[in-house]
Image 1 (tube, helix red, strand yellow):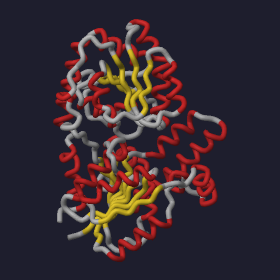
Image 2: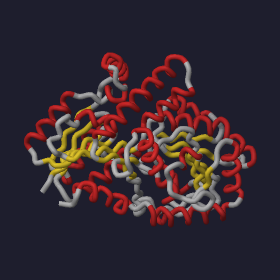
Image 3: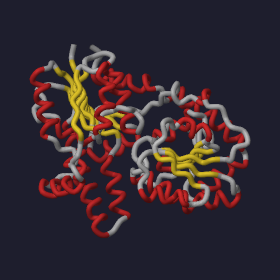
Image 4: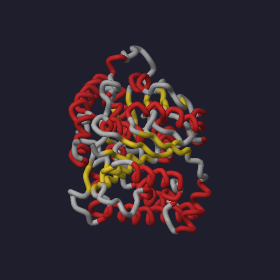
Length: 396
């Protein structure tokens, strides 16, 4: 039976953030039918300990704690003329692990999750199949930052966008198949890299609708209406989204619904996010053991991102919990759903008006939430999405 090597820029456990959710479900699905060797990075010793929960499903597990500073990665990137994103994950130890496993085990397929991990795929694959899951076109995010910024940071982001795009295109032409989280991302990469639809495929994210099920979380009658945003709160697009919403959009909503709360739910809030807790009716939770009670308590879930790549799990999770969602066009992109039926799509003052309408007409919001959950259950089941992997790799 052919074995598989899975290279992950962040070991996918616990599956409690966007990148780890997708990679965890892919890993679990693949490990059901073949021996899988997992190699990759964790951010700290606590994550290293948690990752050992994966051992029962794996043929082997190889972990490195990534402690390279941003400064060191930046210096290395400048010296080597490569993207900082790639230099930040450079590791001779992981490279040695890869070489040893390929020499000792009958590995037929290498799957790299996130572009940074392609650097560990050997130049001579000796007939092994190489599947590259970019997830999204990450270089476009840096290019967008560079376009809106001046000075040193603008230069840094423009450089990163340019070099990372060239790196992505090169890896894309080398891999047997490239995967992206949505057809929109896949189409963008096909056009840019000049590749065919057989070479670049969409593998949509899924949702664990048994876990994200509102049935176990009854609605609280008479509670103050609450708007909820969920996410990793040291991630720049999330930070910028809640800062703008709390300071610009939320006051217009609160002016007409003074008791409304805005809850920012997610781990590692950046200083700019923590400062928002000083604003009237704004709550910053930090890490929570379970995001579902917050989603269930939301009158409306908001996703006001200005810059977003791929598919926003936060939107799908809220829809699965049968909550009405108001998402920006960027947060909606890549999601297969019908605006004004399954969710609202709006930006700026239109977002405030959409939220106000749902607060004023709660029955409409509840109906939209029910339609959203039904759609997610039908469209975004994980096992349905992951059948593409079986086709690409081949069942043993």
